[in-house]
Image 1: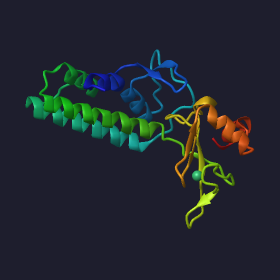
Image 2 (image 1 turned 180 degrees about the horizontal axis):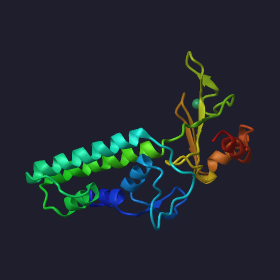
Image 3 (image 1 turned 135 degrees about the vertical axis):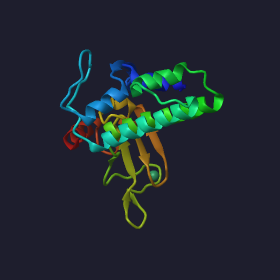
Length: 207
Ligand SMILES: [Zn+2]
C-alpha cells in the first residue's frame, strides 16, 4: 500500500472487498471516526451505512487528536509552516507533495498505522469460537497444558465482526497447530458431530 492508497481510505469513500469477494462502498475512515466521536450527527448524503449505529467511544476523540497532531507536526517538519486547513486536506496535500524517500516511507507507515488503529477501534475483532469438548483429529487431545485450554477453535468472524460465509471458515488446534480451511471445515465439523448449520445458529446466539 502506498501513501496515496492509505490517504484514499482515510479521506475518501472507497471500495472495500469483503471475504466473500464482493466489493462494497464504505465511507472514509476519518469520517467514520468523526461519527464515532459525535454519533448524534449522522453522516450526510450517500453514507451507505448499514447495521447498528456506532456507540459513543471517547477513545475515538483521543485517536482523532493523535492523528491530527502527528500529521500537523509532520507537515511542520517538512515545510516549516503550519497547516491552515483540515486534517483531510492535509493528508491529500501529503500525497501531492514532492516528498523525500524517507518522508514518503515514514508517512506511508504512519498512515497505515492510523488505518489499523481506526479499524481496531471501530470494529474490534471478535475472539475465535472455542470448540469445547471436541477432540483434535491430528493430535487426539481436546485440551492441553496445565490450564486445560481448549485445543480446537473456529475462525468465523470478519474484521468487522460479521460472520463470514461458511466456506471461508477455518479451524485451528492450539496444541499441535494443525489447521483446516475451506471445505475441510464442513467435513471436520460433521466428524466432530458439530454440523455447520448447528454452529451457525449457536454462533448467531452468542453474537
Ligand atoms: Zn491438535
